[in-house]
Amino acid sequence: MSDTSSTIEHAPLLSPRFVWKLTAVITVMCLVTLAIAVTGRMIGKSISYAGNTADRTLHEIIIGHDVISLPSNVIRFESQRVSGVQNAVDTYFSWPGMNGYSEARRDIFNQTRSANGLVFARIAQATMSRDMSGRFTPIYKRLTDGPPLAGPSGLDSFRLRPGAGYANELMYVERAGGERPYAVRCLVEEPAGSDSSFTTQTGCQRDIFIGKDLSVTYRFSIDLLPHWQEIEHDVRKRLEKAFIR
Image (tube, rainbow, N blue to C red; front, top):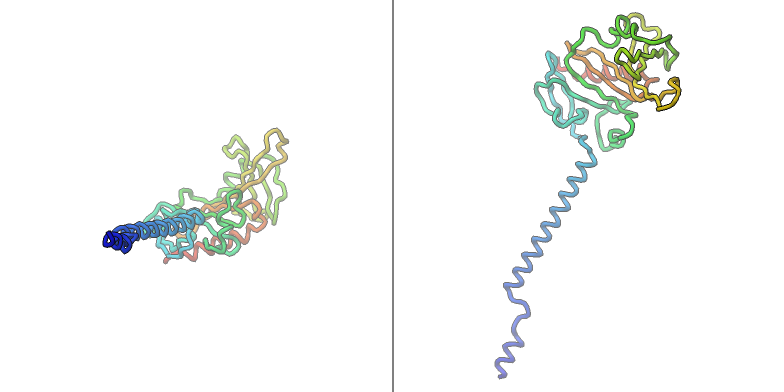
């Protein structure tokens, strides 16, 4: 009787096999927790980027007869961040400075309700013989409705006739630009039920020629229109610098 009691008193509370199983379970749980934490950080970072990237890897992109070198952080869409032949490439830049995406400029690029401080530029082969400045006198001028009104920084505004396919658009034209003036189309919205003389202006678009046969269509907020000369200069300078000759 005493031998049995002694054996029971000295028996381990936890068997080695049970301890091994418990250790394995705890280890697996720790690994799963770590994996969830790492994945969560990666997903969270991806969401915060919202498709943007701070990567500055250069890509040589061939469009028609031109080759341009652009870093990943100025290319808007992930599918276009590759070297080789493409039909077009969409870029975006913070303005002033014409810089690409970075952590320091994340709030500028992640705007959802406005595009203040951003310039969007689509680069593609030219499909027309004239850019917007060249089209104003022979085409757009004939489609204006009424006399011009004074606009910001040496520009005049013309309302384009809705029946000509330019509903709710104004064209701002350089007042002293001659036959090829600076010209930019701006979309306007008329609040329902209000007098048509009161409009809300949203954004502007202009196209220019660069390189051998490329057309650049760039867009910016109407709030930046007073700086049209600087924006035109900066867009040309930044993209012409990207050409590989």
